[in-house]
Image 1: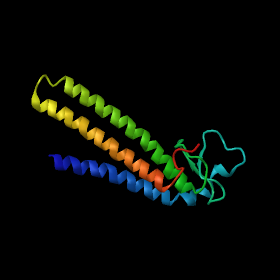
Image 2 (image 1 turned 180 degrees about the vertical axis):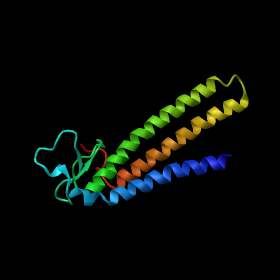
Image 3 (image 1 turned 90 degrees about the vertical axis):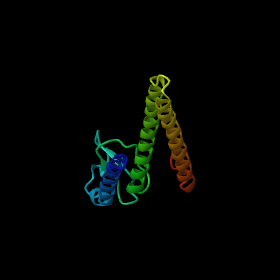
Length: 147
């Protein structure tokens, strides 16, 4: 049963990432007809990248692009920042669920062990994310912490 669940979760992650990569490959083709090239950018239009590196790319949602450099890199970094916020929300939610599990355990050793394992796994995942974030910021300096 757990193997089947892991397989489904893997598919839930692989399919959106593949679609994301395919759409990013078409980003320079869309840049030629982008309204981001107009002098006053229309309201509700969000642009990634600048005109010096292949032209800005229009997005339908505000990903947090800084309109600097290569549009694909700018969009990728914006999505990494957006997903970082998602990791924080998931970690907080997981700790809250583990706290509820722990308080509802009623001295059942198996339920207490499940709750503490959830907390331990959440903290390990948070540490892995923090180290991956730090390594990525070390490899590409000034990527996330510049304004």
